[in-house]
Image (tube, rainbow, N blue to C red; front, side, top):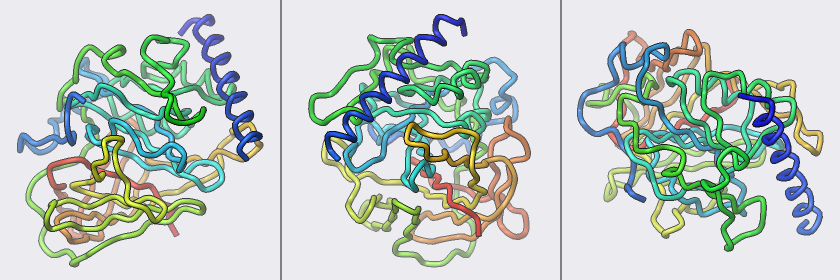
Length: 324
């Protein structure tokens, strides 16, 4: 990435931070539910290799403050990652491979841990609003295609239904030609029949210091209904947000070397390593192990005896939570 693009991105970040500060002082698809659904299981080893040439996924960083809801285009994502950010709040990262919606948003800024999370994909496109100035060189050096409003001004627009900074949207079709296809999902996830056992589970709530998510099983929808901060999560079109599989993944969340413009430290979510997780599918819960040996690997989920855990076909939500 050239110095000109880097400078433009820094300028955009500064501008967006100024808008955010001003707002804080003043205020105080071409697709439905994205889902790999061809019954092939997880991609082959050659498809998973980030060093091989191949299709690239689109990842979009999304605002998840209450003022940013309802979201646009999240229902078309194959995977939705949930991470803790400053002040104990949450952000989303939606990953698109099998379908690309007409619009996605609201778009917000990137974090350092996003770079580690995205290493599993082959040179993905990361769309975001900007980033902390000292983080920009790391983004420029990462094996991904970074796209901000300064890089592709015609791909982003401001919606008129809410105040900045919660009104920046992306037209994905202007930065990717088409949906890259299922081979771009180098997550390591497996799809198929449910494992044996499991515990009948009506709902599961995950709490951050200043945010919470509730997933409630619906027999009628054959999906987990998503709730955020005590309210039903819906799309901009009024449809309930749902997940076929929910993974509550226990990880280390530590301080990073970066702070936001208010001086709050940006949490770093470590997604490489191993630990415990809870997999929710079909109205049941399984306590499993997870392992991601290196950043270029996907994440494997196994039962106590080492058997792979299959996910239900459909959208997957991965919620990263501090391990105890």
